[in-house]
Image (cartoon, helix red, strand yellow):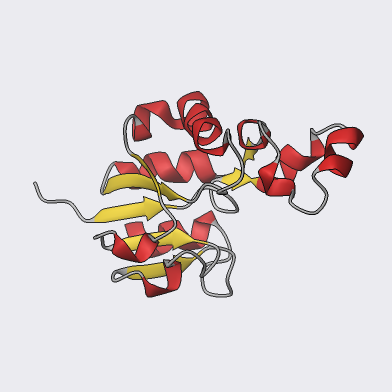
Length: 148
């Protein structure tokens, strides 16, 4: 069976970025205030966005699914933190299916669910579903588009 491929961004799509920041100490927030995404350990602290885990599990029944995320260049733990997050919340779906890149436009697939146009998302050759946009404001809208 040849299934269509869906890529999922992490931050702002599967992962609540602010939830990780909220767990940092005041001292750490002050130290990294100009580049908060460079805080070591930050990406492992984040909570899932409500509905994301359930939506991914439903989509994975119909599509070939992968994580497609970017890791801040100056954060020495970001990539491994993201892998740890996937292992904790979605290992059964994304086991060895995580791609870290700053060039999302280079990947071949049918859909990219991403909240921002950066790192090649807006140039992705398949259909870019902009999570949080007017057309795709939440996981219900994504599910309606992909599963209905």
